[in-house]
Length: 349
Ligand code: 13P
Ligand code: SF4
Image 1 (spheres, protein in one colour):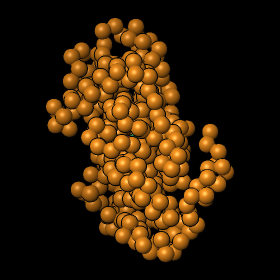
Image 2: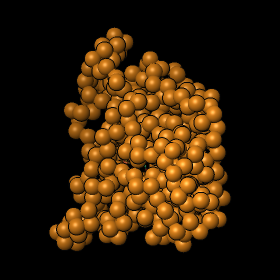
Image 3: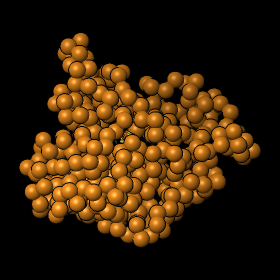
């Protein structure tokens, strides 16, 4: 576990990180991207970190890949690329830096390392896990294969490298239906998200069998709550992530990956929107879409929220938190991820 007290002492010896109105002003162009959701007092606290990280990442020839669930000061302040899991995985194959700092959860950093074994991939907090990735092991995949002989295994990228290595192909929420449909067999095994699998089954011609994992953020939403919200405010557009239960997805006006959600809101610009997903999603796009009022109910991912500016700076400063994947596991896992990327490109996704 990171020792925050000694981390702070180390950082204080090298950087002036005290709140600064002057640094807030120097970085006002960055602040303009989040001033609807971040108070100026908070920006005066974030700006010294943002300045230090942006300088240090040049010195280290590092790029920062940030998931859509990062907080606005990370998403707008220091990220070089933002996106959903599929976009970040593809970006990891394209960047020409020596170092990738993965602002997201551990499986995302592992995916980057699998795809870029020669790069240093830093994870600012190794404890940023994922309830889905923790729900299944490679043995679980073998159990499913034994139960459904001959059926291909499509594993969500929210899995460990070992599970990816034991699978035939990966998918993300952006391509799951198309990947499953492209399998030759009539029965397809999906791991580890039971709700994503059921949502895919509702759109696919395949017999989808699944592992009983779930996302602790999305499983909390209920269709009943959404109906109550819509009764209260019939104007609201409800936009869900496919890790929600099928009942919730049935209530939604649109369901898609995190970037699919951002794209839909940009295209349709509803007067009111409720994003049935992680809290930072609405915060990150609030300034780009002043005409949209975002309903406040949201659930926070405690894993994603382990990533902070302070930990990112520390990881780049000390070059600590390098993710390693056993080369023999990485080689097999890479096949599953690359098959997904190749098929996605072929399908024009
Ligand atoms: P996306 O691939 O849609 O970004 O989802 C990742 C995730 O962890 C959602 O909970
Ligand atoms: Fe995992 Fe859910 Fe957090 Fe996404 S939101 S990282 S699926 S726990």
